Amino acid sequence: MAHVGNGASAEEEEDCFEDAFDRTPSTCRMDLQTAIQETQCALNLVLNNKFSQALDLLKPWWRDSMYHALGYSSILVMQATMTFEQRDIQAAMATIKDALQTCQRFRKRNSVVGSLSSLISRQANLQEEEMHAELCYAECLLQKATLTFVQDENMISFIKGGIKIRTSHQIYKDCQNVLSITQGVAQQSELFRQFEGGVKLGIGSFNLMLSLLPQRVLRLLEFIGFSGNRRFGLSQLREGASNHSLRSILCAFTLLFYNTYVSLILGTGEGDLAEAEALLEPYQEKYPKGSIILFYSARITSLRGNLEKVWTVTQLQWKSDPLP
Image (cartoon, rainbow, N blue to C red; front, side, top):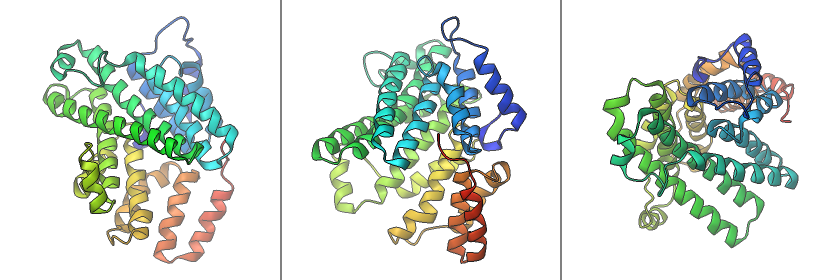
């Protein structure tokens, strides 16, 4: 299996792309391990600017597999937030609603996560499927909240988006509890490692971003269950970035954004360019022409004051393939 953190060769991407079309949703069921592998292949395609191929890879299964649904909707949401075209926003909103329904079918019944003891006592494959369904559902909720803010800026949309964020945060906290309880039992499982990476991404991002809010606002948010610990958030993201799971590169991108933008804009003085360069270096080798990689490379170079190199990187970025 090709881990996103380690990159994938062109042959591996092509094999994965062809294998996806050898199966038809009407005649068989996508297993969780294969779904994660194909989503990793799609992410590799995105990082190589092959957005259309990534969508084609995920499309046959996006209504039947939680990870295909998450990946397919993520690409459309990224396109909508970059273009701000009403057509793209509506298409992404329709897709994310279907993706939430797909994830919902795999979730444990009766509650967000339900009784932890009941969840752990289930069979291993069902337990793992339910755990991953919670993660995918939480991520889809965050995407829908983002689109809600983008689509309409009135107070009703703000409240709706806030409720979705609150629900997603609670799911991540419940998943963190599941992670702490099951860690000694399932720590050797590949699916458990993928689940662990998703929890660290969610918990780390929430803690980091909430910790950036003014203390008065944060104290108010603590009454409804939010919490923000910057040191803990950064440690979770760093652990997630190093575990070579599907979401490891997303943890790395979050840290890159914090070190190269957020810390400078808010004046926290905690931006670490050395860490940013170390996080980006392996991806620069695997995806030398990837638009996202070039974007962060140019940002770090500009902060270092090397304007001549910034111009070279920017020229490469202009030549990258656009979104479909």
